[in-house]
Amino acid sequence: MKRTLIIGLIVGLILAACSSNAPTTRSDTVTPAPLPATTLPPAQPPEIARSPEPPTSASETPQSVQYFLPDPTVGLDQLSSYQLTLTITFKGQRDGQAWEWEDLDTRRFSRQPAAQFTTLTMRDENDQSLPIMYGSLDGAHYFQKGAEACQISWGEQALDNAGVNPAALLPPLATVKEAGQETVNGVTSRHYAIAEASNGLQTTGAVWLAEPGGYVVKYDLTLQAGEQFFGKGIEGAQTFHYELSEINSLQDVSLPVGCPAVLTEIPAMPDALNLVRRPGSMAFTTPSDLKSIQSFYQDKMKALGWTLLAQHTDNARQPVLVFTRHDGEESALISLQQETNDVWVAVQLSKPAAASQATPASP
Image (cartoon, rainbow, N blue to C red; front, side, top):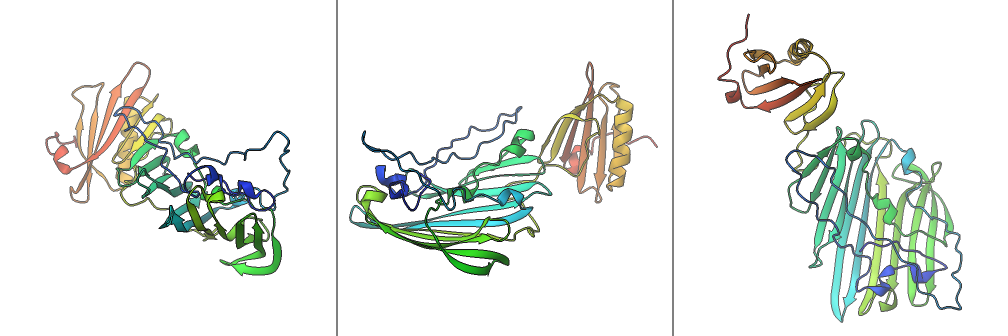
């Protein structure tokens, strides 16, 4: 499992895997249930385990460490947009056999419009790569595990569910040596070198921090060690390579392949309540009266290039409006239902055949 690593004075915390049988690989801890047909609970991103404190004897007192980089995510919350990549690799041996793997984590983030998509590469029960994707766009939250279908939920909870930022998985640093100022990925940065050797662990690398801002622009780290750090029967080198790019200039945070967009083109009433948008559909309640709602959609749909094809008013409490555009290539069904204190509104995009049996609209 992915674990926090600590470098410098407490080398025993560098890898929590010293008590496991693998170096900082991540196991899949999420098995989300299918979304119910009538409810939309937000899907949850995978949990990332954190390092336990190392065991100490009764006579030992844990040593206090002043970290140079205690929180690798610092400063990211001040950026308007960015893309980051974190590649973690291991090359060595396990039980006398060659063993190597590579995990890739990515994140694309935009504050306005609000959107982010993160992919974490986990490890399944067969030690194979298993990508876990989660993110938010247009008020909808997306979750996808491996090759499974993309799950979609809606609401404020979905927007707030940012999950784990891959930057948080970088080992915090204690001992570094300043190496001057450089420009990295278009950002003026302060360069710090890392070189430590203690108790069978050799640590080398470098980190670049933005000036101003203090956020990590680039981070390279290699840990060379044996089983006292990686676990029984494991020895080799683990590397971390992290880069932040398109800082405050990311042009687009698009949906991942296989995840459909929710319906956002057709507007909801200004006083809409309990709004839910899904791919090809939308539903909400409103205190407005039936006549006002029908007028609203006739005006708005016309402005969007839709033509009113039919209007069902046989049941005065359940009118239906049918619109088409692009010479019948698209159709939209807007159903209203008068309830006790409000009106339920449902919008469904469908094939032209859905509107073919409707009665013509009155002139």
